Amino acid sequence: MPEAPEQPLIAEAAAETRGGSVDFRRLPSAADRAPDAAWMVAHTKPRQEKALAEALVAADVACFLPVVRHARFYGHRKRWVELPLFPSYAFVHADAEGRLRALQTKRVAQILPATDQATLEHELRQIDLALAGGAHLDPFPFLEVGRRVVVVRGPFMGMEGLVDERRTWDRLVLNVSMLGRATSLEIDASVLEAVD
Image (cartoon, rainbow, N blue to C red):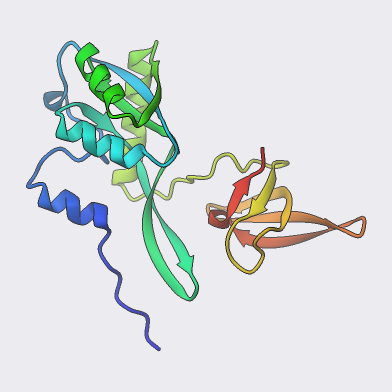
């Protein structure tokens, strides 16, 4: 059976319908920012990054939420979704009033002030340029070598092991101890979560 054509992402469709308004997926230009504002990092509640960014854009508060497209598999279906590059974090450029608006959304756990504004601005600009250029950035940096992980989807769901080696941007080798020996399994990083 032929695969169905890709559906446009809901977020992309919403961005098109906003009629040219500021897109939170791109670093806001100087014209879109308040002159007396500063960068800060909003540590969001779980899975609230996009909702926060949309609420801030609607309230005319500049924000940047770098997202990457990633394939998710649901049975035999493959869907492309946008995931925050830094889960639970959004970058907000606001004054005291904008900071209050962010907190009033009830989607923020904590606001972290940026002490070095120039460095943060430079780093965000580099991320924005990389994303705009189509770079494949890894949204799973917590899966460093030696980290204990669990498989959360697919035929190996529930299996735990240690990350042995990162191979490419979306593949890794997972060690699973069985009978006092180790075996390795190549598996997509999107189906893994770190065990705390």
